[in-house]
Image (cartoon, rainbow, N blue to C red; front, top):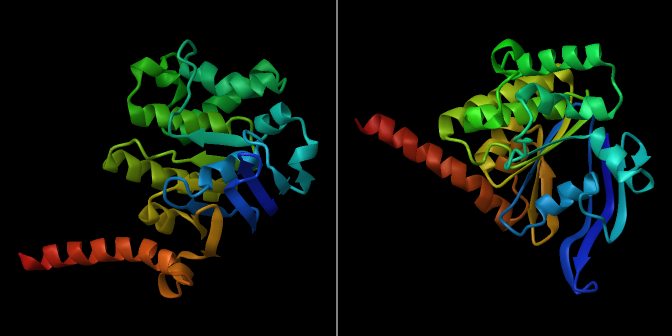
Length: 255
C-alpha cells in the first residue's frame, strides 16, 4: 500500500541529510511504527509521503501511484493525517471539523452527515452530544479523538500519524492507543505512526522501523526487535521498556 524507494531529503544544497536513501514498504492493513530520537528523520519521512515535504530524490508510491505525479492537495485529501498539535479549526464545531474534507471532496450533504455520525461514534464522541461543541469546550483527549475522526472521515485507506498521543496524560493516552488500534484493525487501515516511545510502538505496531541520523537501522516485528536487535542503538531502544518492566515487577514483589 505504501512503498518508499531510495527516498532522500537534503538541506544546504545537499550538504546535510535529513533522510538518507530510505526504502521500505507497508502492506495493506498494517500498522508500522516509525521510531527514533528527535532529529532522526522520522517526521520528515512521514511528511514526504503526502508531500508536506518534497523529496530531494527517490520515489514514494501509495496504492501503486507515484505521489510525485499527484496533485499535492488532492493527495492529502485522500490520506488521513493526525498529529500531536491536533490542528482543529477553532471557529468550526466538532461536526464541521469532521465534515471539512468530505465536503472538499464534493460529497452530498446526507453522505457527509452520516459519515460524521459514524466516525464520531467510532471515537466515542456521539454527534448528538459533541457535534455542536467547539474545540475550546473539549479536553485534550477529546480534541485528539476529533482529530482521529477527521482523519477517518473521507474513508482513506492510508492514515499518517505524527506523535498523535504524545501530549496526553498516561491514562487517556493508553485508552486512545487501544481504541485506535481497534479501529485500525476493524477497518483494515494502513497506518504509519511516528513516535519516540518504544513502548507505544511495541504495543501498537505490526512492524517497527528504527531510525537514527536519517537512516533506517532495522525494520521488523516487535518480537524480532526484542529478541534479535541488529544494531547497538536498536538494542538500547528496546532494552529501555524491558528494564522499566523489570523494575515494576520488582516493586510489585518487594511489598
